[in-house]
Image (tube, rainbow, N blue to C red; front, top):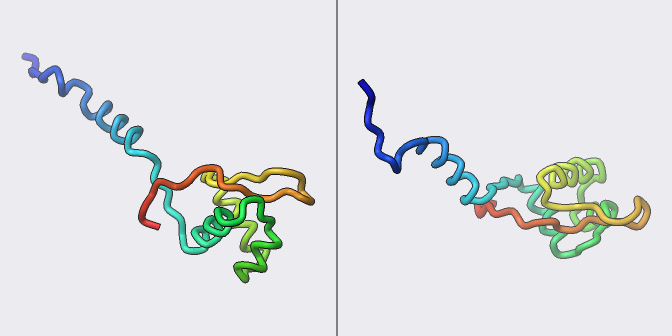
Length: 98
């Protein structure tokens, strides 16, 4: 005895999940500190950590961690040398809940 599955519902779980996930866009959630840093980099492309520290009144160690997390999420990138390089926005997060 075989169960009849309508043609449109075959593999629905797998393809429905894949299609929903792929076409729905990436949802990237940022905490308050990440949001502040990301917005400052958006306003000032090429900004350096030392400048961010002064503008946002945050310790450099904290900014190093936040910038690292934003880089891992592929939202920002570093360009240039260690001495003269800075950070640029790579892509905008698609999440609207931040």
